[in-house]
Length: 103
Image (cartoon, rainbow, N blue to C red; front, side, top):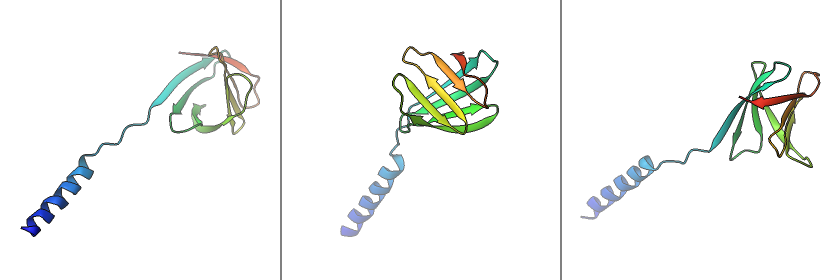
């Protein structure tokens, strides 16, 4: 009888681990088009403070930086600023700062 209880308990433990679903991390992706013709996609994940950017066909991870107003991310020569009002600018490849709008 003890053997049957052990088998049932082991099966229940394995089944519980198999059917346990992990919650998906929330994510946000947004596509932007800039005044100079630049287009990029930026992704944000709830569990990560970085911004994941795809610009000029290259994936780039930008670290969150300190700022007085809004949010600023930078790395690899690219700076992305998102103001409190939603105004977005990008500076990359030694080009001047360019205003961008979500599409």
